[in-house]
Length: 391
Image (cartoon, rainbow, N blue to C red; front, side, top):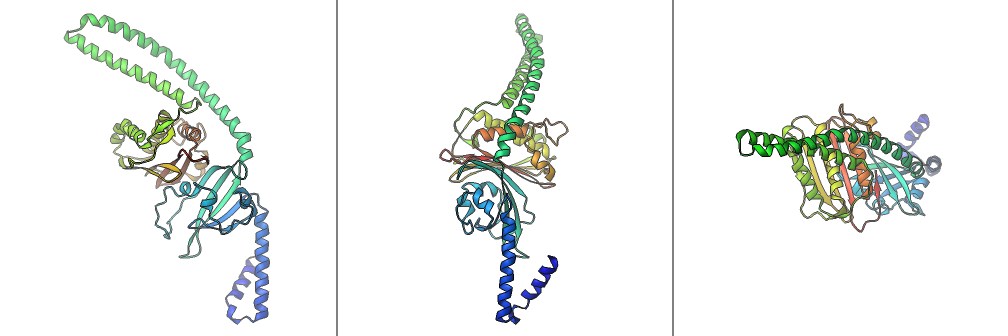
């Protein structure tokens, strides 16, 4: 095949020297090779798309046409129109000016639901490339129908893993709950006896220490309760929520640790961001986990970027760090329970984030490059939106 292409290149290099008969033979030869490649790509079960920088489809094999629900050839159609919301999800943090190539574009993978022509879950894998030196930027997109895979394995794996986590959590809560209850009772007894010493110097000092102990016991009890609530599947209590307000609450709570780590925080949090339907407490858990992960991925002097924006269909929250990044081989395991790259990590944070976002009809996107950092983008649907994105 290499020799065949080499000879073809030689012929193409002297087109101006060919007569009409040879030109016709060349056209027929190119048509046969195109037909061969078309036949090869159309035998694939995976959908293959090539799109330009504006999302216009330049090539689509038969599988891709079926997957995205077009009855005729998809060539010439806009992928962003065919799958609403996909463009914002893929390019949520791409601030590169139009027409300017990125030096090292990250590989992007997404999973999302399509409801037309029938409900299905599709995994998307996008690889940007340049059409020769100085050429236009295009993207090759591979689509895989994973509906059956999701239905047959996700529920089983999720149930088994969550069950084991709940069993572990119940044991931990029981073991910690008993001594905490005992401490609470004895602190109450000590408080009653301390009333006799009120007004004395020693009594006031002991009362202050006692109050600190009671607060710490209450804090430990709250940690256990919040942990159990975080891992126990429960439907969100939806209400109108301002994402910016929730994010600011979490940042205030974590401000001391951020200052201790000397982390620079840069925020773009517009007050005019549309409200969404969400569970405020569950969103706090999501933001806390993501900011915590970002802090732990960076050394002293790192930079944390937080950005909230919205379009006509969704509201987006991006959490970007300048940490160590994620290895390519770990990308597919990020949402698996117990999988962690931290020495002291438990591997539950991103699993909790994924489940909460899924329950909110949202989507989690992660882009990372080793030695550069990681960007986690959360996509929340607005009230009128019907397409549910999944990770």
